[in-house]
Image 1 (cartoon, one colour):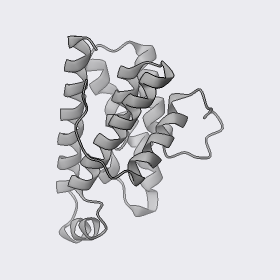
Image 2 (tube, rainbow, N blue to C red):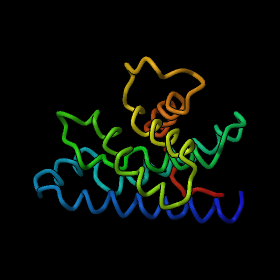
Image 3 (cartoon, rainbow, N blue to C red):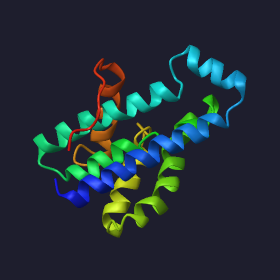
Image 4 (cartoon, helix red, strand yellow):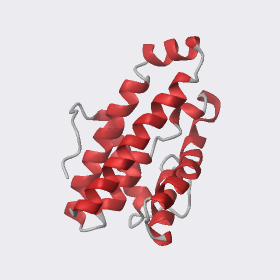
Length: 159
């Protein structure tokens, strides 16, 4: 990975962590207590995000696809997790993509790369999306999300 890539990925990680914390703090005390009781609080969500990004990086390297885009999508996939509620939680992907787009533009990603990353974020909870195929980032991202849910390892992304 180039230095530019490492810097952008670190900026994405910092942005995601700060956004998760900010949106979590806006929740009511009752919501926060319920989320924490079910291991769905901000600390768990951040650790989940790191697990997904680590798995995504390994899979992308082994599949020979754009590692930076995959890691970026993985880091951002739950960006809007706390901006939704239980009734519309499937919307957190679409909301996260909307939230991520201007930030990705500020990092000088190409329009095509931004479109791919945002599509992956938006559709990672859309199992019914007919455009999702084995070759799309979003399909793989859903797999990483599942892997991240069942994995017990923690850690940081090693670029």
